[in-house]
Amino acid sequence: MIYRLATKDLGENSAYAVGKNLDISFKESSEVCSFVRNKGVGIAKRMLGSVIVGKMAVPFKKYNDDLAHKPGISSGRYPMKCAGEILKIIKSAESNALNKGLNTNDLVITHICAHKASTPYHSGRQRRRKMKRSHIEVVVKEQKVEKKEKTTKNNPTKKSISREDKKW
Image (cartoon, rainbow, N blue to C red):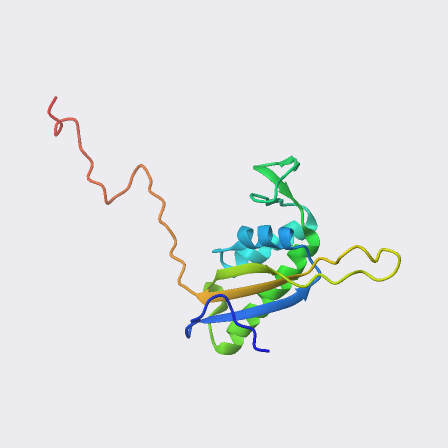
C-alpha cells in the first residue's frame, strides 16, 4: 500500500518524513504538532527538547478540559513521550532534506499533522482497554528566513524635524 501525504505537490525544495503506528496519544500529538507548525527546524528541535526535559509546556488549545494554567500560557501540559517521537520524525525529515541536497539551516516545517491510527486491544487481564496510536507526517521546505530590522530612536533613514521646521 502506498501512503499518500495530505499535501499533494511537494516541489523540489522540500522533503518529508512519516511515522506510522506510533505509540502516542492522538490528542497530545495534535497539540504538539500545532505547537511546532510553521517554525524553523532548529527552533522546533530546541522547543521539543525543552518540553522533554520539562522546562517548557505545550499550550493545549483544543483538548484542554480540566487543565491547569502553566507559566506564560493559559492551559498546557508536558507531553514528553509524544515530543520525543515527533522530534525523531523531524530529525528524519531534516536528514532526508540533507540527502536531497537542501540547506538544513533554512528549513521550515510547512506541514505537520497527526492522524488517528488503528487501536488494537491490549492483551492479558486488561484486554478491554485499547492502545493509543497515531500517524505523524512532516513536510519541511527550504525558505529564506528574513530577519526584521529593529527600529531605533536615532534611525538615520528618518528625517529629523527641528523645532524651526515645525509651524506652530
